[in-house]
Image (tube, rainbow, N blue to C red; front, side, top):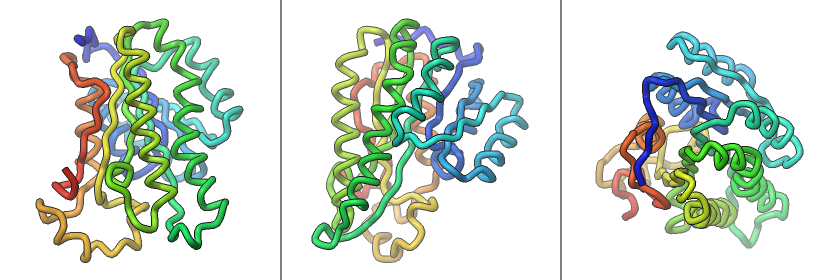
Length: 248
């Protein structure tokens, strides 16, 4: 599958969950590559505005969209009409929460909250913009899953299930939209230095990582940017691990 994306023409990149961490690093890299950004976030206005300022200093536009991706109506209201006027050519789905607990002690709300954001949110977002992307007959979709969705993780049955489901959804979607020149891929980060990994006993996991270091948001953002902006693209329906060798 080849692409006719001209990196000299501004593209619109929808970065879902872009206020900090991997999302912020990705939004900034996409802006540096020439994209204008639609940046969604849930509640952290200060972090979102800081990301917006960094993007504007690059000379690109950044529109902030505050809503809960787990809420279907709110997501549709924020994205559908906007996409009908100007469809994004890039979508990065980076929304995610975690409520870790052993399954035997896991509360129903801990299960449903993670599934609602991490998996239902993907449906809500992509459903809102996909028709416009199909009509334009081009696009790149990248979902941020996790190594937990590939190999599982004790204490994260909910998170592992959601991320594994996200991988399956993207593989199926790739088969649906490939003929419309829309590439769909997944990145699966391992242990990355973000707010979500605060409290993780990193010193216990470090010996298991062959590269011998914790990953940084830019380690993930660089791969996402490649998948979104490289003109010659034959990677489709794939899961790319970004984990320093923690899992193969």
